[in-house]
Amino acid sequence: MESHTEDSLTDIASRVYHEYDLTVARDIMKSICLNSPSSEIQKTGMEYLYMNAYFRELDQLIEKNRESINPSNRLWGNIYRLMIDLFNQHTSPDKTLHYLDYFKTRYTIKEPEITLLIKLIRETCFYYKRNYRRLGDLIATYETHLDEVKERILVNFFKVRIYRFYTVFHMARNELIIARKYAYKALNINESILLEAAIHSHLGLSYTFDTYEKGMYHLKKAQQISQKHNIRLYKHRVENNFIPLLSGKFKKVDEVQSMDKAEQAHLEVARGDYDKALDLLETVRIETPLQRYYLGLAKQDKDILIQSYNEFILNNNDFFYSRLPLEALDL
Image 1 (tube, rainbow, N blue to C red):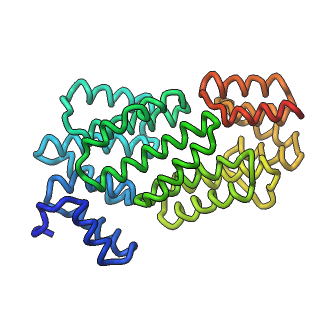
Image 2: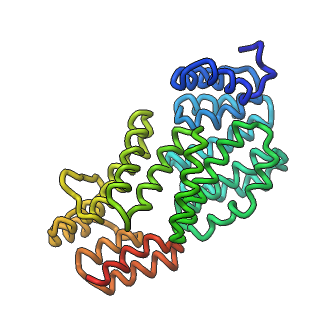
């Protein structure tokens, strides 16, 4: 390892992936990222560990960078700590946006990788806040920043992330052909276990109004990837939110369960038990237009469905899921 301290992570990955099968190669790369004495690999290695769902090792490498004598490594470590705390829901999107503004005022950031990474984290905050209108900010400018990134493996990782946001952005605009095009572009890069699970989730949900079988195929893929690589947050969301949503929409609810009370209510509506659905929703604080849609279904109340529709459009700029209450208004 010490004899290759001048090699880039891209060069090392190219040799390792050429010589070993995928599983062994990833384990070797994990070890190199975690143990390399190279300050550059210590920085870029965090992205590799994140995108391949090596979260325990990523925590270790983040702290190594934060304790480095190199100011650049410390900055990278702090940014990745912020990103992982957001991912693990230890920090809210609003607090994360505040911290990002702090970094911009505290540091004169000249590294294009960090500039782009901060933009990606900001987009993630808007995604978690369901503010899909703001997702267009990065889409308009990413190529300029990406052209300045020299490390090829980082370019590929960042592209997968950006294509994921393209998928979400166009899906919210109800532009499903374009959304699926970018989803498949991301999968074809095939550099990230983590984003592979996420993109299959988006693809699965994109069939909410089309085909149960196609949608469930992608959601099951996301579930399998998350289970195999112990991506617990994704696995939880797929099993307790995405699969129940799709199943309830198509009334294919045999043996489908959820830990989410609102999704349980949706499943009961699909089974025709409106009283049980209402009992469940009485325990839920209705905060999202999707939850309000479930309430409108359970009560068969057009005013609530109209309110849900307006919230999808006005609050989230989401023209895809706004179709749920719009369809239900015909009931």
